[in-house]
Length: 156
Image (cartoon, rainbow, N blue to C red):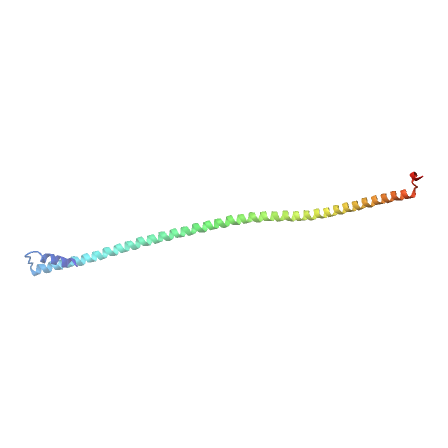
């Protein structure tokens, strides 16, 4: 309900009130001018409130976007830090692996040499045993031959 209508209703509801037509018209036009002015002021005020809300929202959105960019940058920095750390760790592990592979290769070579040496030693032992056995058999044979060729002293 407009202010002019409210004002006119209030005046006409007063007991025994009779305002002359010109006064009613002036009051009505004054009130309606004020009403139009008040409505304009209200509209201006509402527009200002809306503009202020828009401005605050825009500032809030900018701040939110700035925080989001900062979080993203921090996350990227952490990822790069992790990449650097993992690359260093990978380098260290590769270095250890290379040393272990070198040690393994050296161990395999040494093992092959030792196997050859063991095989040679076994052959020498086997040859020595054969030689000893052969010599023992020769000695036994000589002894046996000697006993056969000489008469038994005790038999006479």
